[in-house]
Amino acid sequence: MMGPLQPRSITTAGEPEDEALLASAIAAAIAHELHEAGRQVRFVLVPTRERVIVSLCDADGTVLSLLTPARVLAIAAGEPLL
Image (cartoon, rainbow, N blue to C red; front, side, top):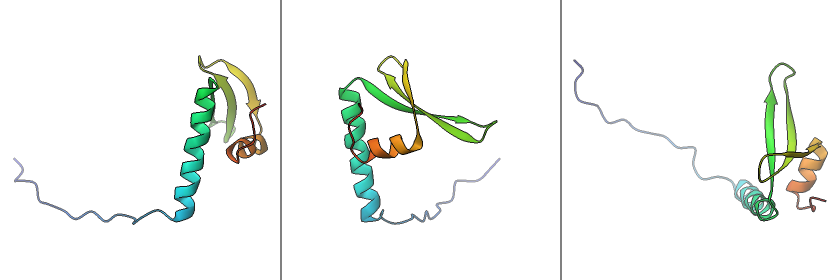
């Protein structure tokens, strides 16, 4: 039988950098815009090929198109979907 749990100290990484906070806010706004348009971006890891496939899907999950890494970055930067 084990004794009572001993308290332990947890060290955090600190506050995120301002750049990370800004990037998160932009990503959240773009995710909201995609959702409002009935779209979503999905990332799927293909371990046998050690790569990620990115697709633009509708609200039901139907793949509308595959996205290149350049296109994903363009959407993340605020370019329109179509």
